[in-house]
Image (tube, rainbow, N blue to C red; front, side, top):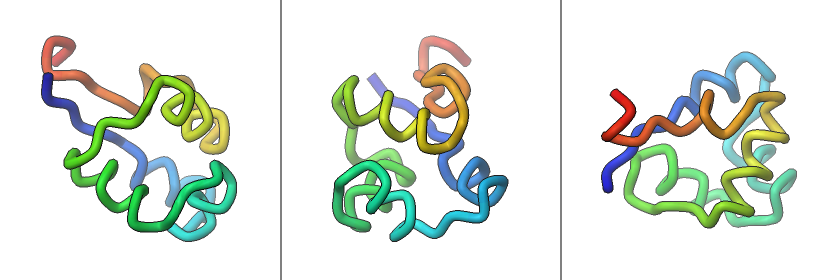
Length: 68
């Protein structure tokens, strides 16, 4: 299942770099890069942590191909 993310958009709203977000959720910056590019599917727990750090819901951040 493919997906798109709005992480970059929400990071900008919250004035966060990829590194900042990575530190907040406990992963490496490269993980955030791969998720933003749609090359890595995060676990539900990581998706939740990312959404929480960006003051959003999982549905707002992650757009799955079946939802478009």
